[in-house]
Length: 464
Image (tube, rainbow, N blue to C red; front, side, top):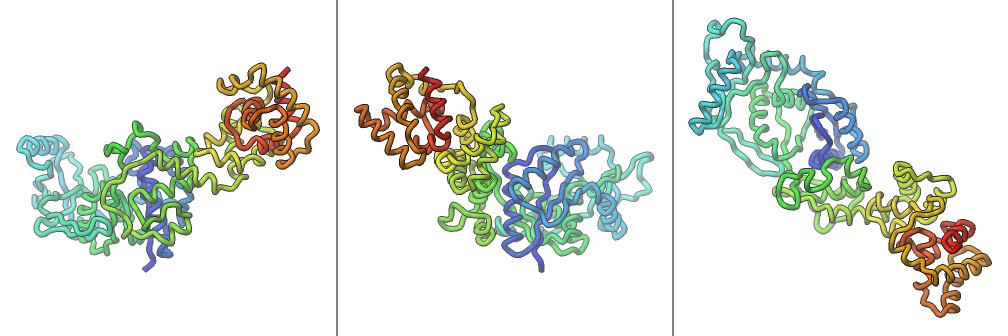
């Protein structure tokens, strides 16, 4: 049996981190078993589904590197098949026509609530003669669900879960307008797409018992089910905007690397010993559902940011340079060829200090800015009259230095000694003049990245 998993989002909003983790688990499980991972867009809610939301999902999955093995399937294109299965169940007596009006259903619900009973359909058309059907009312089709016994689910994460059939009613599988309900469409699609494992959030657990009834009625083999706990905020409440970013593309805009976000989401509810920093290949090798816990996970943005910094330090310098250039352009900082070379040259030092791409872009901006530089207040405070005079003398020394790290370092140390200053008392005003800030990679590396001509021009811009 070839393992086939699916990610089946509804395009009614953004790709949430919870959905991203579900997609990741499905992807890794399929890859671990040498199987296939497919994507189904469940767009049956036509009033709320939008093409823009579909594109956000596709863009998010692409950014995360979760590539499906087949083109996406759109659920709305399969409505004829969903109706065909409903009609088969009707013909076999495993479903029936229900002529309840919306008013009757509302009354039924209100009465159940008033009597403190679960608001279930009372089955009034289950065994009623269709000849009694009211004129002008189009029927819905309901599954003739068993009323005795129970449904037993051996969930790969939650363990054995049982629900009595008496606690479930005869659900609608085809609405009166001929459109399928979500629960029915999902079963038909999973069967036809040969899905072997349904891995999804545990908020779908109650749906699964109803869906099993459709599998049983059709005589279809059921997939294995694994319901993973949801992601909560640090306070234990449902994750929302007030906790921080929740959509995948928000994290991209905030400067997180996709491999860092995937690494973090994997460890959010799954574990393998002390393994923390895992490449995609290692994730595929190690991932099993046995490692998934049953308790809800809590989103820790500080931990994600720390992990992102670790991934930044491992990332390719050219890739980071290109991302920085793109972010600076959005901030109206023009990056020419010379500035691109400076950023690439200094990237090994810049990425050691940054935790996000946004921080990296901010710390790289001085390499692209034209004079006069904008100065942070702390940097401006360093440019006292005394320090400006010192920088004037330093510029004269640097004019005669061959620009390589060793020569620059030696010249700065010799200058500091001649001035009777500590190296930091020279480096900090110099850093302020060169960058407009008080932080940068090593001062010799910063000088090297700017080059002699640019460095001298920046020093003289603040001393004349």
